Structures are given as structure tokens and as C-alpha cells.
Image 1 (tube, rainbow, N blue to C red):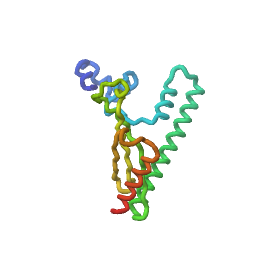
Image 2: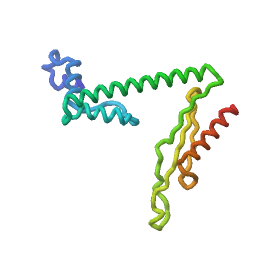
Image 3: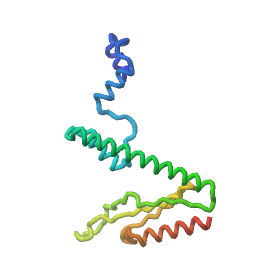
Length: 168
């Protein structure tokens, strides 16, 4: 864009340097290039909003900045521990680490039923178990008509996953 600017205004060629143009563009325009973030930490997002807020006083903003720094340090510590666990799992065969979670549940909106009672959406559950050491995942998918999203289902999926892993 700096090149286009210089083409349009050739008299400013030696005056407006690329670094100045970049800083001015980033400071004065809200355009972002690249992929948008999909999964953003809600705490980080909330604290960043407080920091940028024009309605809060300086004391509240400083408190939000301090809280954000503490939060990011904790996150960094967590990820470094996860990396250590991953390395231990790769080095030793008698250790296994897993992480599990229900992914974003998806409604299935197209149900050809006439009665109003049955027109609500059917939910499709996706449960993921990730073996941290091996870098593999197992996905369990089902609808709410087959099972619920409770502790019994989670334990059944975990038992099945661990049984499969021990057989390997």
C-alpha cells in the first residue's frame, strides 16, 4: 500500500518512509490482515475490552492491565507444563496423558415433523479425546436421541478410548 501511495503522490517519495506510513496506518485505521481468531479466551477478551474502554478511569484500567498480565503468565505456565507432560509421554511408554471435551454442539435444523412440539432442533454432540503424547484424537459423535451429554456418556467414552489405547 505504501507503494501505491507513492505512485499516487510522487512528490512525497523521499519524505514519507515505509515505517512512518505503516505506523500511521496501524494507529489510525482499524483494518486487520490475516485470519481472524476463532477461539479467543473470554478472560483476555474481557480484560482487553476494559483496557480499551473510554468510560473507565486510570485506576480501573491499570487493575485490568495487571490482571491481564497475571492471566497471561498463568496461561504461559500452563502451556509450558503441557509441553513437559507431552515430552514425558513421548519418552516413556508407561505414561499417558489425555485431554477431553465436548466440542461445539451443532443443531440439526431440518426435521420433517409437522407437530409444533417436535419442531425444536435436534442436537448433534461431538466428544473428543486427545492423546497428548501420541498426538492422536478419537471422536465420539451422537445425537440427543441416542444419549445425553452427562457424566455417564463421558465415562463410557473414556472407558472405550482407554480400552482401545491399551490394546495397541
